[in-house]
Length: 67
Image 1: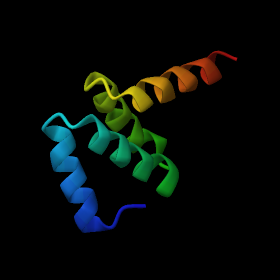
Image 2: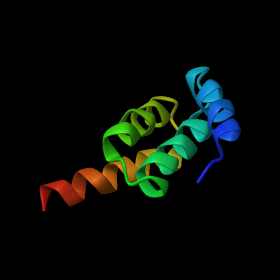
Image 3: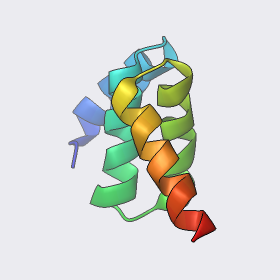
Image 4: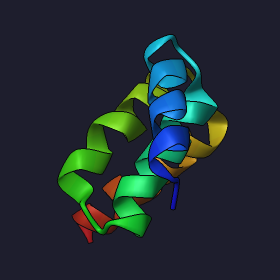
């Protein structure tokens, strides 16, 4: 889980197009706070930035939802 200062820094970087930072924010919400509603936009932002781990994570989530 990210501390509040680090979360703010990562959000700013993500908003500037940093896919890895967006993925870390996604993980913070999805796994640190168990808040998938707040996590999802950050995963999508990370995928849009073509961050490979996020692309795989989203594909896995979609596959889990179809089963």
